[in-house]
Amino acid sequence: MEVARMCLEAQKFEHALFSAHLAVEKALKARYIDKHDDAAPFTHELHELASQIPLPLPGEQMALLREMSRLAVRARYADHQWSEEQATHKNAEYWVSHAEQLLQSILQ
Picture 1 (spheres, rainbow, N blue to C red):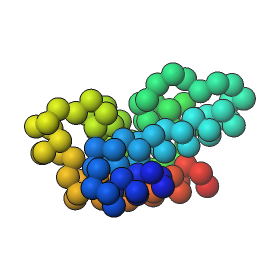
Picture 2: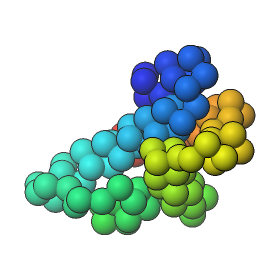
Picture 3: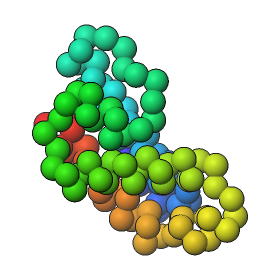
Picture 4: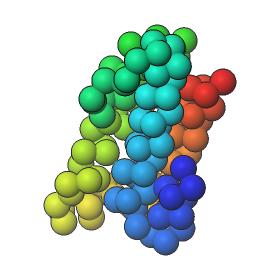
């Protein structure tokens, strides 16, 4: 999350979006390993990881995980038009903030 915050401050919004997703993904995979004593699945789909643990996340947080997964792919392989429309300061702030909230739920 530190990298996501740094990218947000540096106005590197695509990288902030991607880094926020990565932080949540790594936390979910750590919980998976802890719960199953086995390697985490090779997926970047956050809601799939969360459902395999399982975590007591409310439906709204599961929906956020789905949307964050879509954004991360777009942020990683974005084209110029997508970046101008979606990789904005407002969106990056929104997702970095939600990623921090999700981390609190995942790591408690």
